[in-house]
Image 1 (tube, rainbow, N blue to C red):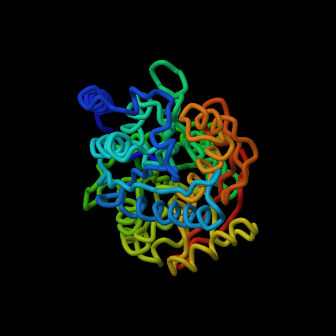
Image 2 (image 1 turned 135 degrees about the horizontal axis):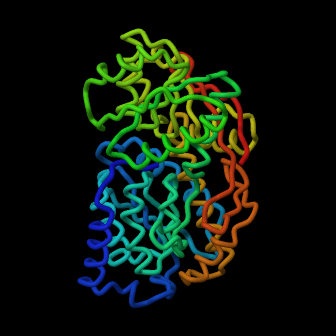
Image 3 (image 1 turned 60 degrees about the vertical axis):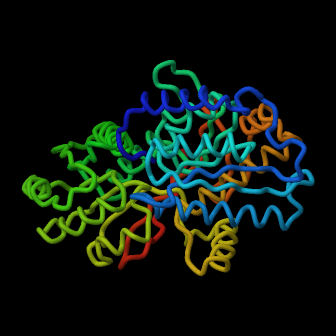
Length: 396
């Protein structure tokens, strides 16, 4: 997922400048392991632990910690235990860059996990590409994370544990058409977020391809307190559905204010809605008749899902959201790569990640495609009285 449109180029320059200035041992070491002689495998975690998306980062970190606990209790990897080094990027791209640099240069990690949102992950990409350190993002869904949009080349050192936005947008458009029988839609886009704009684009394309009509596309700015002017225009158009591909903080206010002015049709969105904070902001009743595409459903009867949910609840006394499960999956994918590589050599670990095939995770069996994106299914969830209810699973 991706937040604000920031100056990616300037972030990249910051990363490059920092690397040059610090004389990174990792970059000079190429594919060598930073801690190859140690009894531990050091993995850096670069998450949003404070700031606007803190809910995402803290959930994902809980998933990472659970996976590491289980791996270490079962003997570790190739005789080594995993030692995670955690850095808070404060939900800001420039801080994500600095956190990654610190983890590589000072903590000497052998791989990175992070970030949860695409903007922050994109800010990390130049750092790991330069340092030649494997990175796996738990939940960055923007296609640009793994494929450079300018060169069209795959970022050699970058992987992800989640599906990408073209699939997610298409899934919800098809659900709108086939399951909700929607013929018209209005779309609300966070004008400062590539995540929001990208999802809106793919939703619109698929919705129109299915024979639907987009009545309007309305822009909003993240952090705005009042959306009623836009919502009033949408109400006058009387669409069958309102698609809002934003983050839980803004979405909660939009849904609440939409219901207050009398919009009764379904609101829809993506994985950016999935936070316990959404229900607190929007109100459980207002969220009725809303739907999201997501990575998993806690009430899915799949034994792998239920085993994870049970373990997570036992450790944290709360149900895991999608960010938690993706943090867990990303850690296990990376651990498997270290195991298959039989080494902490960065090139061997990267190649083992790229060769991942039919690896069982909580969110399904994962095989990486040529772009380092996992081929995996999505689920549709409905909110009922503040609870997420599994509707259906959709395969790619």
